[in-house]
Amino acid sequence: MRGAVKSNFVAILLGLTVVVGCGRADSNQTGGAAVPPTRVETDPALFTIGRPVDLEPFSAPAIRATTVRGDPFDLHALRGRVVIVNFWATYCAPCVKEMPLLVEAYTQKRDSGLVVVGVSMDTADNPEIRPFLDRFDVEYPVVVGGEFAEAFGGVYVLPTTFFVDRSGQVVSRINGLIREPVLSDVLAHML
Image (tube, rainbow, N blue to C red):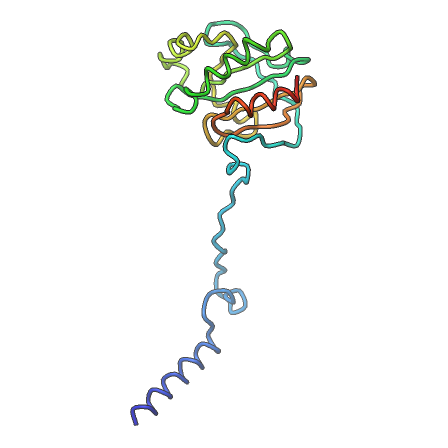
């Protein structure tokens, strides 16, 4: 008797499953509200931390600003040069680590047509920016502003570095800390 009850129970459950269904996949067919599938969209480039990611070339945005030292800055005026646009912040440990590398690259290669542009993601009134730049002897232009990140299509990690070729096209990006061999290789192809 006990086996017959158990068999009948299993048969009823199986019958209900066939008639009702196991999930909400068929809810549109039965008049219920659709439940969208759970899916996380990510930029595959975010998983290439520290390595160059080739971009579909696009024109460097028209950025005009005043540097943190009070000088006028115009990105379009740098056409004909290779430009590194580095997004960083004073609170970002990898940014602090890579700053000497960018200063050295600029110092060594500026006569070959290299310009480094720093974009601080700190707030404009952050009193730590100028001492930070002085600490690393930063001579290249540095501007402040998140709107520049939007103009480059978004910055999702700090540091993020964009490379602009001599024709003014943004051609690649490195998310995260740049290491010397990687930077040397990228610049060897661009300069």
